Image (cartoon, rainbow, N blue to C red):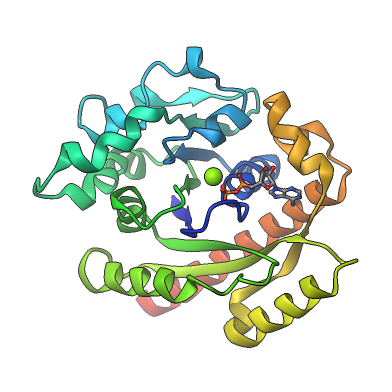
Length: 266
Ligand code: ADP
Ligand code: MG
């Protein structure tokens, strides 16, 4: 089981869209995927058609230790893609956990039974637009971070802070945390700024940036209002096709890492 956290403290960069559609694409190629909605806004839950009425137990109950994670899992309409939904209560977690010991390990501890059971091959965590306790919990629980970056002028702004947080988490909570990759989102090829930003980001991050670029695509932005992933709403659209390609890259990177680990262990 690989746990990938989708993080960027900027809002509106495509975290939730990536969580939903990468999750769907991974499930489509046969992976067993659990998406954890760790944003009190619950956009990933809504976008997957899991409205308020269907959210019996949520990530809040799990982090507060009131429910085991399996009790919060909801099946989506897609085979191979399950969800742990979020609701607004989640915003209270930081205050409610206070200075409790292991406050940063609540998610990791909660996911341990899933690691042991081995039912899921990928767990994706959709983060809130902030470097708060929820994001720290996600990073402490994760194997790697996937960073969506919007192709706009201030794309790189705030990334230093994000990388510093990753370093802090490595230094204290989770030494094995890696960067899975950086994905460029909402790329507009009619806009020369998109191209320029993409060039800058590749210059700065090199091969960490996935080859796949997610285009700005109206079908992708329409899909959530139907409670469907773009891949279900319109599989043929450029956005859906890009997320399928991204899933392939993610899996190849995970395989390469796995082989390296196995070679190191031998
Ligand atoms: P975040 O979770 O980082 O706040 P979202 O995934 O919610 O960002 O995306 C922000 C907005 O941009 C949403 O309205 C979403 O529908 C839209 N969006 C995201 N990706 C695309 C895309 N590839 N093409 C068009 N619109 C997109
Ligand atoms: Mg979001």
